Length: 358
Ligand SMILES: Nc1ncnc2c1ncn2[C@@H]1O[C@H](COP(=O)(O)OP(=O)(O)O)[C@@H](O)[C@H]1O
Ligand SMILES: [Mg+2]
Image (cartoon, rainbow, N blue to C red; front, side, top):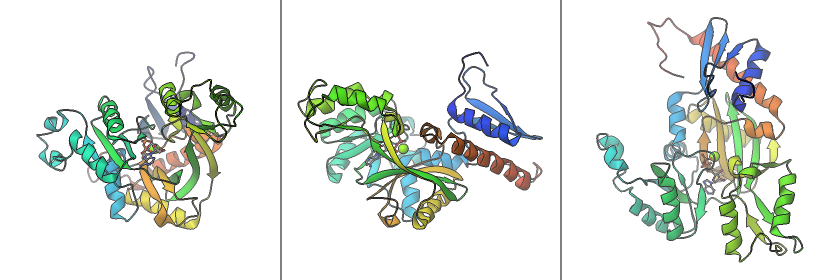
């Protein structure tokens, strides 16, 4: 690797875990480090950065990449998801799929015009996001058909489908499940600035930049979004923020958009643990991150929980930034050990059993 080249954070943790286990770690893609190979004796496994858990089934990862399909699987096991639906937002996309009638069939009523009808039925505000998005990209609450139309246009530039759903209330958490047990959870909230009647918005925002312990992604907050929020309240960056007035800095609580994280736990209540592991099991995922809302805390009854998405490639960078790098490396150790043990115990001669993918 050339000097100064950075290993992507998940691979850096996997490397440390491999070294601790006596496995060999190698980056075959010298150009941008998207691939890693971990070898143990005669066995080895390739990891791809966006699908880096070798213990996850690739069909399951594809299913959870689609938020609407995830919702269908979860509804079938009576786990609550937001009321909503997905719509094609790129002109001509359904025509492109016409050779796949089975795929288009369910979407005949899912063109952009129907999205507005659907939102009206749900009642504004509604939440809109790419159906297969990541990192909170373009995920936002919209309050009117005009805002929704603008949001759908933005999504159409990058994604074929958008999902429109009810806005879920309560407190959002990430629950991480590995090999049938919860390993950690934390609560996340979109970043906000609250006025004290003395300082300007600008000064309060500057202070937040220095208060780093629970705040992730503040460097990414969108200037445009903040200016819109201020304008809606008739304020500018130089205005003294009235006491108690709150300005949102991020449209959602994904760590990439700016989030305030607290209530980090290594153990969750038993009922919550059973609920979370049942979800991982139903989706056939050995490792996953469940993004969910509870009305209050994880002590609430699980039948009040709502899952907004399940992540089949949950990054450990957030817990690393929170100061739990050692835990992230231990998780990687378990992932790699699970993979190699699994291979050692389950591998059959190729002719008798062929694994197509992991
Ligand atoms: N229905 C919803 N109601 C309220 N907030 C939501 C809703 N769906 C998503 N969000 C917010 O948007 C963020 C991103 O949405 P999510 O479905 O997790 O997609 P991704 O993280 O893959 O971009 C969530 O972390 C949450 O803060
Ligand atoms: Mg998410």
